[in-house]
Length: 309
Image (cartoon, rainbow, N blue to C red; front, top):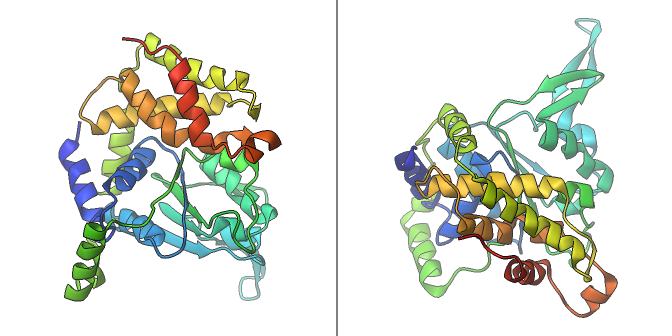
């Protein structure tokens, strides 16, 4: 267990990303669990600041791409270009070759371009002109999107949504948090560079330790029961995938790990179910009309599944 490094990482990120410690914690959980994060919120609440502060704090390579309707898949993964000097084609790697990639406003680009992320997110590799390149660990995509009812947005395909371990909302800060942010802005603290407090190797070591967190059979059964219960919910087109169950278990291990435990308890599963599952649910038209949300349905499912003692 490396609790000291985790607390150091949290406090370092929160130097610039002020007042949303629970969001910071969930992003760290996703990183240690080997997952990716989708952040949906209005502009200006700190989505980019969070991703960049995370990368700087782990001494990782940060890459950002601003996605627009004319962004091409090659703008993300790279392409081959002919070199007149060498008289051969050379691979020019795209911004996805990094540790932390910020895909900004992902739902403003076309589904074809969105799909360019799928292989990298799932397989940790990129294929260019028939050659496969393994991405450096740790690797995480932090994608941001504007609310889907805003002008010029494309809903993310279900297959892509299912590859994000978590979907988070930052929200507006409270008055006290806003005051702290304003004071740091006036004092110049927000302009100071974030220094690395741990290394990328530390993150890889912690990811390996997360995988060794004990998850007893009754806790695994509880997590899978939650997944299976969603398949009986009439407000859903279909239930959750096996991938959702596996990511829920891994996120629960990471949640237990940052709490200083080497074993998972049912409360860990409940906490992670609320951030790992709602965005994967595909609601029926009737459910949308009745203003159901994925968050509401997950809470209802959790209430119906018996929790082990």
